[in-house]
Image (cartoon, rainbow, N blue to C red):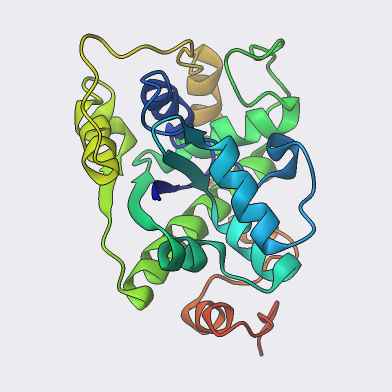
Length: 253
């Protein structure tokens, strides 16, 4: 079965791009299917998980799509002792897309705001709520985002997997290259006409206010006081341990 995995981190534009490809009805249904709240239940085995991801992420033409963050692979490894992506590649004809956002600060701010409000999509009620400015929260999101992109790049190199690489900002005016990549990797026809989406850009004047406040605060405050807590460092040693199915090290002397 043909599928595509979109490798990224939250607030990278993946929701918007996914809405464009999902609207075609032939590109699979891209979503964070390894979040059990999206899946709708808690699989008892890895095979049950993979089957459910293909079912939820599939379209009638036998194609499926799944969006993955590094934490999804860590969860699958911890829960089932299995590297989800490696199993997908081994069992199915998989295409891979690495999607990142160039503007890490605004991505971190968007992540911080969404985490504080619990609203991750512009279609959700209350998506326009503005939480209290949080320097520590932005720092933590920034570190997480950088670690996530570094993880994907290292993982892909170590596993020697081919992939297409896109940057969100380069697609804002014309997302066609992304859609064309999905079409090619899934062996489906490009949709005719304009791409459809029910999402809207969530950036607003509050975002720019937070950017300025953060840049001012960063001149006098140390970001080291706001590292993400209890996260195994995404370094080469831990990535190797992950691929070898060994326990990752939380801290190292």
